[in-house]
Length: 126
Image 1 (tube, rainbow, N blue to C red):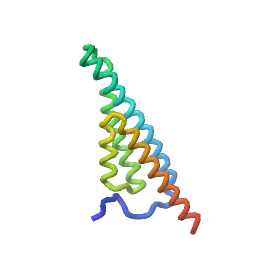
Image 2: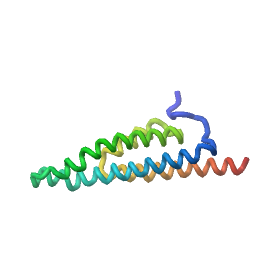
Image 3: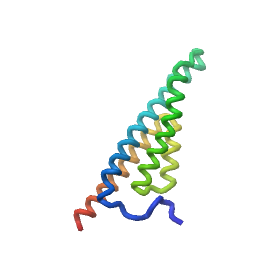
Image 4: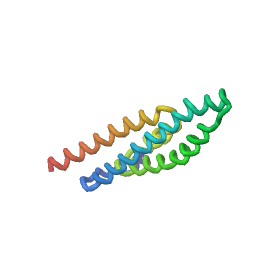
C-alpha cells in the first residue's frame, strides 16, 4: 500500500496545471493564515478582555469558510504533484494554528518548485 496519491512520474504537460494549483494554494494559505492571526491576536483579546466581539465575528466566519477552500486547493495541488497523504494532513492541520500556515506554504512551495525542476531536467535530458 502506497502512502502517495499516485506513484507515476509528473509529465511536462502537467506543469501549467501544477503552477496554477500552486498559486491558488499559496493565495489561500496566506489569506487563511492572515485571518487566523488577526482572529487570535486581535479578536480574541478584544472579545475576552474588552467585551467586543466584532473582530471575532468579522474574521472567524470568513476564516472558517476559506479554510475549507484551502483544504480543496491543498488537495488539488497534492494530487497534481503526488504528495503523500501525511503531507496533506499536515498542511490541513497547519491552517488551524496561527502562523503555521505560512510555514507550511513555504515548505510546500519549495517542494513543488523542486519537483518542477526535476521534471524540467528530466525532459531536457531526453
